[in-house]
Length: 308
Image 1 (cartoon, rainbow, N blue to C red):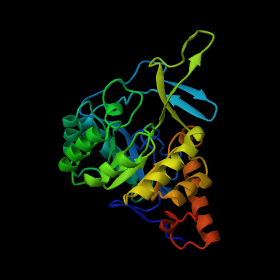
Image 2: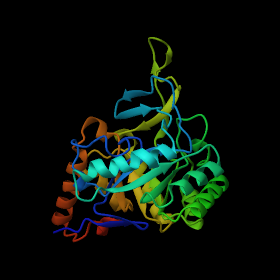
Image 3: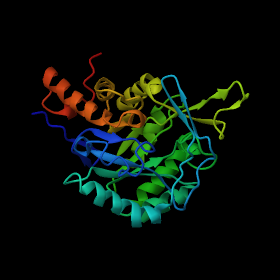
């Protein structure tokens, strides 16, 4: 029997699989469609201090190998999330599985103080916090904080001071090197990294001669980003000792195993959930089968097991 437990910077997960923020709602929307026993954690869509409307429609466009979206982090705010959404997740999913997957809350803000305030309000009501400093599809907030190591340092420092929960920092992929950003996170007390966020992208409707998305640009996710994501995970793993939650184009077990061999401790499934909610179970079972075939007693032994 393969041991599937992993430790993501203090967040103990029953399996190495999580869901990627923005692709799984607040965790309860897929009830009846996914096998929650195969998940170690659910990552809620972005939460900020106040209600946020997101971007105007249309907000997504399918492209070969993926999806370009500009939802804009629409949400009801942290107080509504804590009072209604989080309890409903635990109650409704708890009716399906004895112990619901751990809850990672993705947070963002328009200022460093807002990031810290959201983390403080969450307190110990969730299991971990993922700090989104790299969203490419909002005109104010998260996307600016992950482009400058000095600014990133202040965000991580402020959130670290505001919470005792495991702190995961979701970094921007569109930087010359992930290394200085990963190093800043390690120096300021982050417990783990989340790699990668979507890649800035644009789609044009040539018949209308207009952008296909009202926001003009958005973020590319799906199969197309996977090789780039694997390389970034590999670079970060060699640079710092922080555990990594990897994501980007995971559609089958092979994709998740690549991430883990490159250095990931856990893997999040995102865009694939939209087209096939059974992806989570298939990926989980495929990882277990691979470990059995390759002689790994624990899934955690896959992390960094790349031979070069």
